[in-house]
Amino acid sequence: MVLYEFIDYSTLKLIWWLLLGVLLIGFAMTDGFDMGVGALLPFVGRTDTERRVAINTIGPTWEGNQVWFILGGGAIFAAWPPLYAISFSGFYLAMFVVLAAMILRPVAFKYRSKRPDPGWRDRWDWALFVGSFVPALVFGVAVGNVLLGIPFKLDPDLRMTYDGSFFGLFSPFTLLCGLLSVCMLVMHGGAWLGLRANGVVAERGRRYGSFAAIGAIVLFALGGYLVSAGYVDGYRITSQIDPNMPSNPLWKTVVTGDAAWMQNYAAYPILWLAPALGFLGAFGALAGLNSRFERLTFVSSQLSVFGIIATVGVSMFPFILPSSVQPDASLTVWDSASTHRTLFNMLVATIIFMPMILIYTAWVYKVLWGKVDEQTIENNNDTAY
Image (cartoon, rainbow, N blue to C red):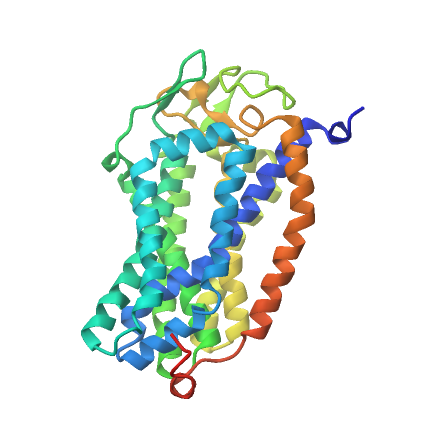
């Protein structure tokens, strides 16, 4: 027996589904508060110094936080090739918008302090806002489209045809998901400013973060109602499926409707912990933002982010990309993965390198930890952003 066969193929598929969730949640928890701070920047900072306070709470670590985004894309490419091919092709223009916004953000970080002119800095501050708000919105819209199903088809040779359009991605439900994503990350950014900033910037961050927490609670509840009441069709496999099967999404039968996204909760009631954490974390963040329990507020915000994203994952399992026009072609955990050997080799690499990344990240945060206020900016004017 070769080494990789010591772990069952179906077990490896499940492990990589979980790892993909970890990477996406890790990205939302880390780069998410960066985006939240960027989206709040024009509102929490009335002067250049106040805006520099907000920027310097994320300035030393935002680049490292984006590693989670790169790891997530790499994991999709290597572990779920059909998912990578279809999603990156179908969402091409949306991906381009996201990447353009995320490229704008580092340019704004580097350029805003190159000139003392107020107009120059104000324009780059709004560029930071756009580079933070747009990805937060589009990521949520993308998740909403995944829940609805993507208009793609597969022929017998597994060649993909995408029938959608860029503007077709924006529907009332997907915009609701996009606004939920924005509120979730702005709440997270407000909690971060309350933790890392001092003075009026922290106060405004808490205030706007509180509004965002209320918005996240309301929109998460509304989205859950639409899904559970059957206004959003779910997907359900009606044929037998072998978890150890080779990749071929066409070897199954799928039906839609009947609030199918709720069936996992009926089968495994423990999964209700995911949406419960989403709500409890948001309520905890709201309470903390109004009572100044800084660390508890940030932890609660993280729990809410975890719960909201995990809710999508456990609701859809085993689906990872349903098709709205050819349901039988929907991609699932069991029929869209890479080979047994590939998943095993990737897992070995992950076991070796992931702890190193986590240890280094923790060390960076420890070294760079501390409150940022206007006095800090003035004392470090040459090195601060």
